Length: 143
Image (cartoon, rainbow, N blue to C red; front, side, top):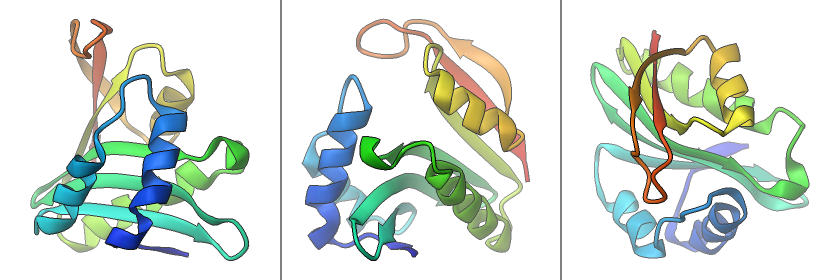
């Protein structure tokens, strides 16, 4: 089941975040996301395992900006990230969004494959974008 996150989900989101990214966002950032109308934080919850994936995105029509998608390492390789991404893109289409955007680390091969399979195209490189100076690839998808 994919549903909007609540404050009670933040421990699980924080754990997935720390397993998934070199540089993590503070818990307070996710708390703030729950408070903004344009910010969305959705979780994929498994009946037995609990929260196994999340997506943080901003929905500002006509655009959806995907900030983060992550799956707990124990549940990777089962298409859960693709499922969450498809959910977000479908929701964005229903809200009349016409463009999806995101940034991804140049070296994040699994994420690049996920986004490419969904139809995203690389349109720009943001050099030294991340705190560790790694480049970000800007990707777009016409919805």
